[in-house]
Image (cartoon, rainbow, N blue to C red; front, top):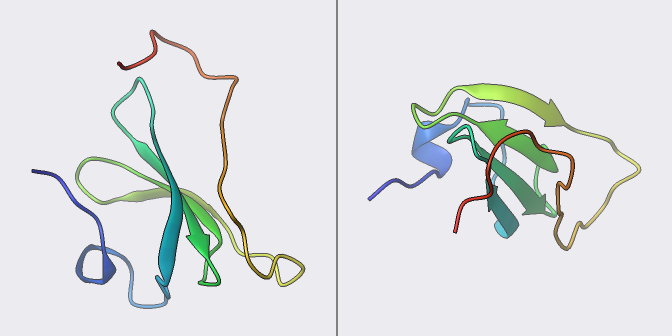
Amino acid sequence: MWSVGHEQLPAEFEPHYFAGIQRLPNGNTVVANYAGKPQFFEVTPKHKVVWQVDDPKLSAVAGHLILDVEGEPLR
């Protein structure tokens, strides 16, 4: 079973409570990190971070939904 947590993320990440997790058709996963840093990030199945959003104006995110994704939705 695949998972992601503190052990698989870069040292500067501060995972707190994953409030939203979305698997993309390409196999990557987008995570909303409630009250942690960064607040949003995308990670590959091999735990490589593709992008991240760390904005001090965002204090506590409650989730996310990415709608504009190429490929067939995963069910």
